[in-house]
Amino acid sequence: MKKEAIVKTGEKPGRGKYCCTNCHTCVSLDSEDKLPPCPKCTNSEFTKRN
Image (cartoon, rainbow, N blue to C red):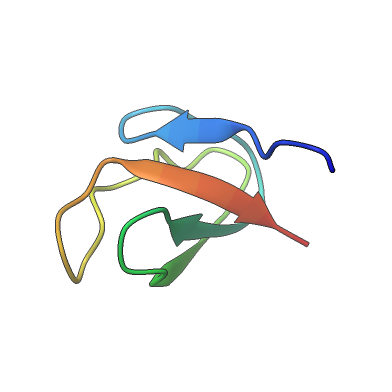
């Protein structure tokens, strides 16, 4: 099983959907957007979803 890469708040990971590792709330980013803290729990770590 492949381990998912962790993306942190403040990074510019590129266009896509990123889900909080704590509460699983997802945010969608455009190519130049910086990843914000989780809007629900303020966690700073996310994984990318397809």
